[in-house]
Image (cartoon, rainbow, N blue to C red):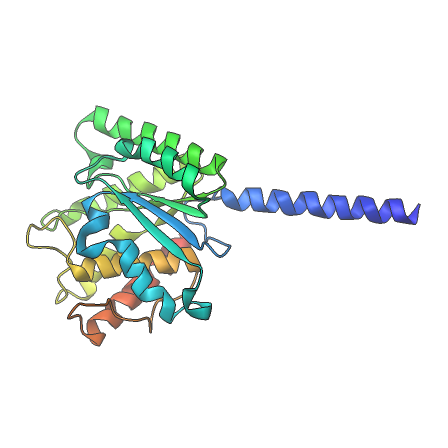
Length: 257
């Protein structure tokens, strides 16, 4: 009888552990913190992701200086389409899922796709995000939404973009990396740092590094302050530290919402 009782207890514990893992696969809230190591990450995006040698490269610049064992075994892959909308990535995700088991997939819509004046564009984003989140979750990957930033001359769009990404995350059980809110915070607290390329839309190296710092803080629940500078750039340590602090403050404030 004692053996049966112990076996039942062990079975119950095992089942409860599975449930906990299943629960954390789906974010309980768009503002929730992530758990787990989140070592194998795919980033689906467009030029916002691949500018300045890709955000995944900038994560590889940063993580060895901050994660255990110099981030050995951590992998970041950028899958990008120039000017692409999120829906253009559906077949790419289907293919990538046959190549690798991903811990996390990051989904980035086209610039202001989420707040387009065209209802059909907004609806296509929601439909595509829903389909891709379902595909990712079925493959055992967490979903993180890349909250994009507004055009340099339209800072008033920042909260609209934030609301759109929070909404789709709530709908699909995704987490949110509040990159757009970090851009807004940096714009007001460090106006001397230019986050934009000369077109006022795409990111400068500072903008890309800020995004990478936000992803680091979101994925690993750890401050990026003190992390390495982006390799092969002329960014100075003071700028890097300011961006690291903005990223950490933005993520922690967002997760308290």
